[in-house]
Image (cartoon, rainbow, N blue to C red; front, side, top):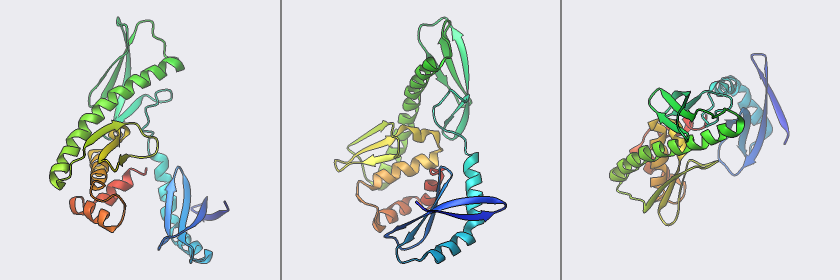
Length: 233
């Protein structure tokens, strides 16, 4: 893919241009990469002109993305996790116990370990797996409350709700009216969790992303775009 370049504040910014069957030009920034999506009919000069006008915004967005802290459950290089958009510090304590035990409150994640337990890479993976189970329980409780809330508001009820880990999606609604929500959404705030839950509930009525689908979401959540954008960080 051909790389294009724009400069702002002494920084060289590379971006890719992708043509698609769309009506307008969009600038996407993800993983510190800049992709400009444009309609087939738009020539490169028009794209260059838009990027030139938006280069300050692109520059600020890239810098902001670097400041967003890692929300993954990876304890090898950091000593904190995120629960409901709060940074929760991780503390280890050795005790006379046989198995790993974890207790999480609003500010601290206490990880209790056997006396002979060593914090090597293999054992940290065991802690992460245990922590995943704990986070899944927290997520399941929070998601259940929110799903019930928006089901009552919209009058739409799924046949089944499952909370599990996904790599690339926040949720899924099947033709059987069964909804799955990514447990990792618990790392974000309630506003973002509500958006994901309402998004999947809306699919119980509209199994696509056409205008009627978004109008339905907007009816119950006028600021859904702002909430969705926060999940792209």
